[in-house]
Image (cartoon, rainbow, N blue to C red):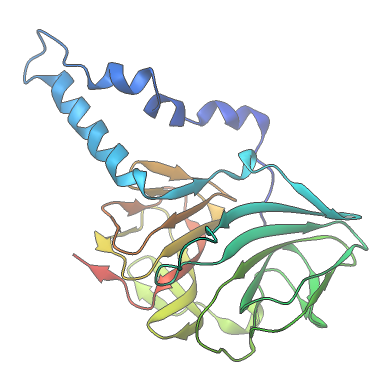
Amino acid sequence: MTTTDTPKSDANDDMSLLLSEPFAQAWATPTPGLAGRLGERLGGRLAQSLQAERGMVTVRRRKAQPEPLADGVQQRWLYRAPRQRALRPGEPRAASVIELQAGACLALATGGPREFLVLRGSAAVDAEHLGLRDFLLLPAGATPVLSSVDGAHVFVREAEGPAVERTLVRDAEAGWPEFAPGIRRRVLWTGGGQSALLYRADPGASVPTHSHGYDEECLMVQGELFLDDVLLQQGDYQLAPAGTGHRITETDTGVVIYAHGDAELRFT
């Protein structure tokens, strides 16, 4: 189960343009003569959807342009917090996917606590060999070197906050504990009310309406997931700020998701 490029033909499946102008205004305009004022009802639903999405950050992998960092190394940014304000509860300082070609390496600058999750191939991080879906958390102050013999894609999340201990979770050893009907959850790290997690959901599985006490991040490792009216596909990322929530969380295909947020979901 790996992260792969989205085929070019899939670009036609992106319906986000229908939520922007001039289409948004047209949808919101009442349609005369329709029973039950269907135009107004559609417009109201659209307004609710746009309002819910206003505070969220959604990044499509196919639209995240790679930036070169070194020979054979590029980075796709998923999130960078503004420097001029304090972080919200659970908000990351930065999140990205670093792509290494075979034989490439990259030294990272000193930073806050960092999480590493291998999405494709295998890599060495801080002299630790990591395979597919292996997870490593390094405490603040580390200056790790990333390298890969055969090539790799590595998700990297940098945060601020309380001190953490070095944590290593091997995919082959961790298992998938039952969480809810059709959903399994692997706790990668937890502390201070928030956690880093991997969810594995069967086709048709769903999560009830819930709110977020901490910023919630979702990275699609495999499959597709509806978060309200947004369809996230493999490699896509969404950050929902603390204080927001999701009415709909469901998958038709089955999905593996990296999530960072509340240690326990707040159902409403």
